[in-house]
Image (cartoon, rainbow, N blue to C red; front, side):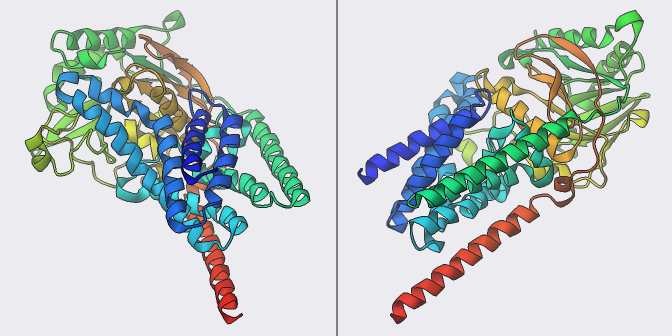
Length: 502
């Protein structure tokens, strides 16, 4: 097979790997594609070819899992539609460079097909961590997420989603590396299956442990405001009044929920000019605390915020991790000269980030909630940037920007992974869906489907004890990956010296 055929086959393997992510969740197919990908990557004879193969594999995977990036540009196609092809192709080509770097790194520290296959384990994990942290990060569709529909995902409570990625690569790479020795490869494959079976049984047992009920009822409100109408002056009162009506509805025998949650930017006015709207919300809620997404300004800066209305007082959390090119524009003044502007914020060149170290939302008897706004829910490390442990997570989002094919489902899966990693339940309110309540094991216990208008009440699930991952974060995986790369690199140097001496 020629190098070009191998490259295109790697791109196809990357596309098939994407089937392991939501909404398809074909984890078994993704694992088969990943095994092929590892085999082809390790076979490169030269550094340049290794990098090219990694790049082609990355392009396939990113295209399969990130193609929804064109949807925000089609909300206002006259202004932004021309950017859509550049966005999806530029993102795919750019992120694929990280995969290329991982493949090249494995080639550098390995000294043959077998060692290079093994080197792909830490090298690709380092590539995932780089994607998660560097240049503000963008860890969308991490490899470990493919396990979410299985009990194996529960092990993320120990090592996080990147630890799941490391485990997955290890279980596949070892049999692939030993493929020339059939007995050893067969034994490694059996051992890999045994590890998966053990994690499966352990995860199922973890999910089966009964937890005491909190008895607290939460309501998520889903107004279902289409993005192209959301800020239309004729429709803004319609969507706001729709949310008010759902807030005011009483439960069985007139019972009221203990907490009501509205989605991101649900209030159609800046917070400092929304006194009348907030008064209407307070009346509709009948004294029940309300969490709601809202924009606000201070000292000439604009913020995307989540506010807690309780006993006539408002506590505010300002979003810290903003979406590049969506909520703020890098080099905004320069790029605006060519008509390139941000998409989500209508204020100046976008939002300002909220400060670090903001407190949790204190809801009194309901406990303390850790607030997340949209994009922040894809970053495991962002949940560790608060001064104390929360009792539950709350994520508000507006996924109306991103179509109805894959992104809302994959975004929901990211939220489920955060619940497993932290051992905390999550309340998720999305403007057009998917809203719901997620327990500490990542199960969606109640939800409103994509494109539905309505509300859902559910008893807030209890929190579990603080997980190992919540305490240590990604540091153990980082140290493991670096240690393994250093060991392989030392082996490569020793072998090169021996060859030169001979």
